[in-house]
Image 1: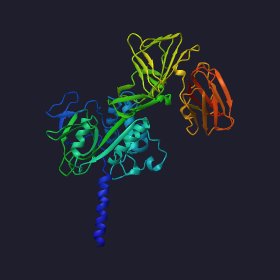
Image 2: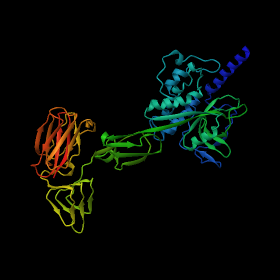
Image 3: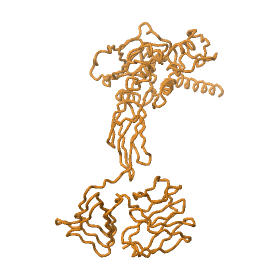
Image 4: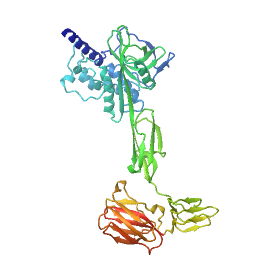
Length: 528
């Protein structure tokens, strides 16, 4: 019994080692007699029917480890897609900057010297201390680290995805990365690989080059042929494309595959609204290179969309702004208050106002109502206000039914329909007076206090009406103003309910303004 338990424990330990500790060996050059597979020069088009081959992945020679070199090819590929800060300078060829991104001299001096080979591991700064802060792919992969039990140039499969994620975040934390490890016993092992290539995402494979059943090399996967079940790689030893049979790792299977790592990197698209109360934006987030970004700006009531800007430069005047993701971008949807445009002259024709309608018509100069065979009818219960700067003409075809309410004004203060307030609440010590131009709008949405209210009845009135205040402080001041902003009557009240008499004023629309020093509520009343 004890022997079987020990064997079970040994099996579990061996399985865990196989699952998590697979690694490459130190292979800066191909071993003698290695199978080159089907060789394709990178400058040539595909050579076999069914070949699917990515373009744009730079082939790199072995640089202080096949693991960091293979991930370096993936990084160099994304650098060319617009993530251009991943490698300093040019990454399409193996420049000194590309080599530094893979495994720079800091890495080599701290972890590779003195060089060690099986079976003797030598101490390096991963155990001695004093190493530099990680700043290249090989650092984040822990390549050659004595503390991880790795010889010079060796890397673990389990560190491939971490190295990519951590290196990209080290370079630009606004990029978003997604990685995954796919193993040869997965049911979607082949289909997932083809899907990555079809979506222009290179992978890194851990393989057994000599068929001895043990992993020994990392390569960059860049193509496939589903007809003959082969896969294409850059092998870190030359600049050619090499094609091999797709097969799981096993003794006697050259270039058998243990697993591969998938990579995805996305730009961050940020969209903001200015001012924030002006409207909302949708469509921002993370996007792959070349993916279409659809931003939409929606104005809130009282505002209109103006344009999209980036670094204060206009990029679009359309509320729906689409572009291809090619860099991190921060865009601003700009809104402005919707100021009604008052026409020079206005013809009110073919208009019918029902019992619940309340409309205002204005013109800088003249308003003409009906005439020329046109009809205008204001039915019982409707409210109509006409404001002009010069004249208002009522012609044949106009009919105000009994029970309708209509006011017509010639303004002397350039105040038009936009100066007519609805129920407005102001607080936080905002100005309590109506300016001369009749403007009486709340400055901020957060100033609205629904717990305070003003009721006026009856409305419309012949002059006698009641006011009922809710939650107002004692000593509230009530002012009655006309549409020009002039004060008609001021009342200091002590009770929440009181009467007001306007029977001596001209018929028309007036503003009842209640102010307790902290909150102002303005309401419209019609005297007929």
